[in-house]
Length: 289
Length: 315
Image 1 (cartoon, rainbow over the protein chains, first blue to last red):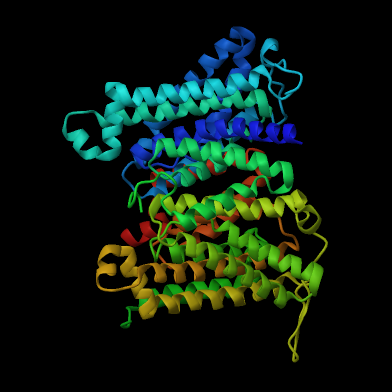
Image 2 (image 1 turned 90 degrees about the vertical axis):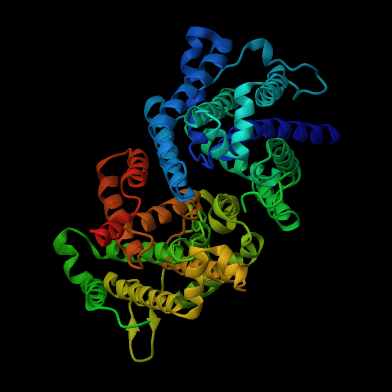
């Protein structure tokens, strides 16, 4: 029993890592540009499918690097052509715009790669169980958690110690002043958006190896990512991470006792957080209210 | 309100005349009566959403939840309790209002994108309940094997199941009632206060208006009427679908309001009519309806942010 419980917790942690990766990208974009990117799930799906197509040529490791990069470039193009037109306008318009994009991306994946689930193979040595007692501890799962942690750390390091990261943090605080100090905020937003999309693409490649590859893969992950952000507190990146892991584990644990509520439980958790602490666990008071 | 010049009254009269006579001319222009009922149902939902969106200035992206609660409330009542059309509708609306009252209390103090995000997320709970609770709701297949019942008024009998035209007028009756109620509310001091909140919330707060309470009440009216629309929608199809509860449906209500013009009272009706007719037409032409609708969203945001009536008013 306790082993099974451990299995569910660990499973939840992995799913939570996806949520966290995805929510981190969403959070970056919301914080700097005030845009809720509904299309994030669509980009995730595109990243996963690109990896599928590239794998025969460049292998798993090549695809792991190239697919998210291509997705980020696609994100850059979309930001330059469409998203930047709604910056500074009523959030209603950015919601509708990215909502439409989400439909287009998901449908594009369906048209190009077909509606059926595609096999997505990971390197054989990664899919072996590491221990016979803890059968669920495959190398791939550990690898996923490790890589997710590594990319999160890389993002935080970029924000903390590089010039552009510093500008992003300053821009979150006061974009107008940053602009007045001579920073090209158009480029800053583009870079920030692409970075968020890169994380979505990466989450897509990792998720495809675990959840299977189908056009709705992103649509299923995006709502929990919203919940992760709300629970963690809008405006706080560490909060987003904690939120993601928390709902992952909560839904993993629930699936052990009451499987049909495993999706609904994260919304109950969100309601509780809103009830006790409306700004979210790590949210700053008065921000975005 | 002071007396307005006549063009406005003339427009109102024209719209009601068109709606009242629709069953007689719809076939001639290539439509059918059920399509007319569908336009009314969607227009009611979009107008209810716009009460909040356009006239209170609060962005809800989760109205499908209450629409779907209305649909399932009606369907479940008729299927399992009593085959009474009116009682089904009553339960549907009550379910939507009850859920809205609780959720509303949790979120009325949130604003802007925070509010939008929370409403999107909360909407999903009901979707998962409908989707997962197989043996009651029918799960992914939806709630079927029930149908709307005729209504006996004493002096007359409404043959709702048999005659699409009778059902159209049944829907129109509730549509007119709801729109009249919303129009009346908007002209009352309460409605004026909502406009004040929309225009400048901080100032409204400073002159002593309990802003959160007003938003909560506006949210309640909006969600309740969305629930009524959902109940009528389920009656129209004799079916309730978990997808009625999902976030894509919420997005469609918002786009209807924006497409028609969310600063106009009639805007959502115009938007719903265009959207429903287009959907009916395009879904028979192509399999790639999703791409089409996605492109539609993008084009509206980029080129028609003020909606049809917004453009007309400026011209």
